[in-house]
Length: 112
Image (cartoon, rainbow, N blue to C red; front, side, top):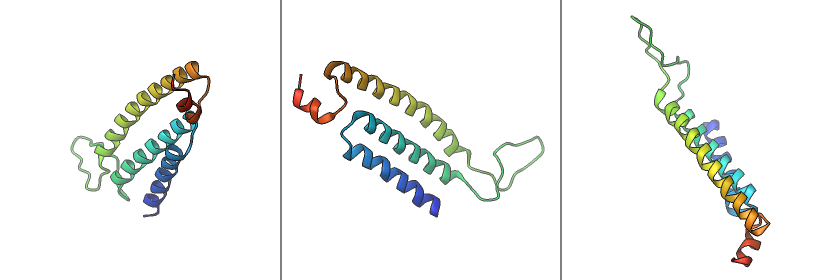
């Protein structure tokens, strides 16, 4: 149960960074923290105590097995998150080239 609370705390830290920070780089880091918290939550959902990996050998059956679906979802989420982060960083670099700052309040004042 404490793992879920820590996962929620990590999500709240990332959400705080996204909502309260004015630097684009800090917002991107906050989005990464949120992504890690969601991935951790999915892995925690699929975990079972005293269980084995979902690998079956010929003629063998496993009674208590870890759920492989959340693991597959997390792997897909990591790849998609990496692509989204690369896109956001590229947009942030273009904003810096145009305005010369990462501060959102200054960018809003310029409107150019």
